Length: 545
Image (cartoon, rainbow, N blue to C red; front, side):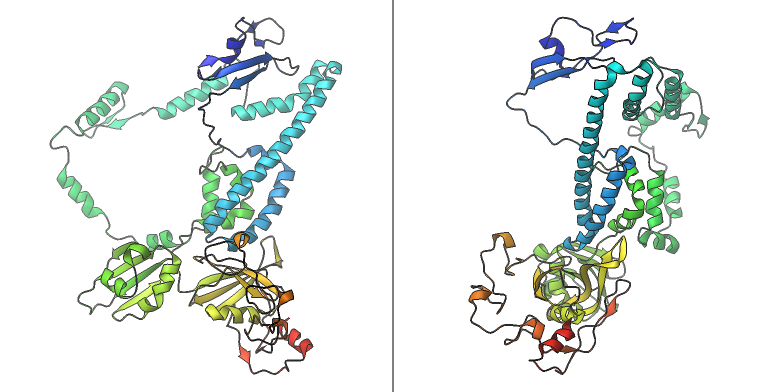
């Protein structure tokens, strides 16, 4: 390392002055790597500091690699009302994006990126406002008294205290009793007061403690008989071979909101639980809003796993032969096969699609019972459906891909009385649903865990909508031409018959499902005999809207 300022200005100079000008020194250095070159170095005078800033232009070597910097959330944003309001507003909108992600973990990883971007924007705003105020104050310094100047700079001093992580700072820069007491407390916590030696005696003398540690680590791998096998065997016999039922229930139950809150309260300040740079102070500040999502993040998703339990009267059972006979490609479909006690196996597939493909054949097997950890149902999210559209229409269209068990309408977390346009359905899928379906005159998005992504425009595989060159007719639903050029009869997206559009579909349903967010409404679409003449457009529209 080298001092960049001294390399450009070799003449010694002072960079710090005491306020009363009684003492000055060159205590500041600007060190850079030897491979770097300081092209230019300048000093400047500022009225609100006893240090002189140095501005340096550095030339980097041609082979220098710029790496991504580490970001950490600025805790002072918790005190900024504008940031807090903006975060609550955006988080309300971000919550509606959950159906677009496979799991809540994927959604939360995306949200942390959004939190970082929002924090940076507000940090830039706050720094810009402070800089403008500082420039305005400097212009007024010539007319201020020393007391007024101290009051103006108090916020900058407090900011320096916070950044230095010191609660108190004495006048000047010499250590005080506060620092000595703090270091003494830290040192006392690191000292081992007593230790038990090989003779089972407690030793408290420092020299004896050192000898015990030295003797232990010197002999731990060198002595031939350093293990007491009788003591070891007795200890193992005292251990429970099974977990207590109450403990098992506590360990298996989902993480409660109170447990997450207790963990946050006990955590230290200025610490981040991960590499995302978001500290505990942020989670504590907005816990009332993000607490439920934090608790749900840690739920184990076993949607791709099943359990096979072999009947007791079956003498021999080969798990891999059993799976292969039912269409499972062991090398391509499976990620884990775990043998449990009592003729049971846990089977984990690489993808939910692989599990769903062989699930019917595995369930029909004789001599064993097969269960799915997440059940055989899938939560299907449908986005952008017109709110007024009868839910039976949506359930009828989804029924082409499996059995619709129940459904509900989603609302905004902070506004439970306002629907956000997302409908959820529990289904037993028989085949995968495309990423987009034509419902109510719109291209509605379909999202669920393990869904193969298809083009939102043509429904094809292997490309996205932005790369699609297909033209789809919204009149006859056929590719290759626009609806304005179509000469064929209109095709209904509900019943898939020609001669009418979905608004005039003659299908009639047994009841109109009322939207609710509080509970799931069971049942698939119940189609009854046609009661409305196909030509009566007004009555047909009233049936579906």
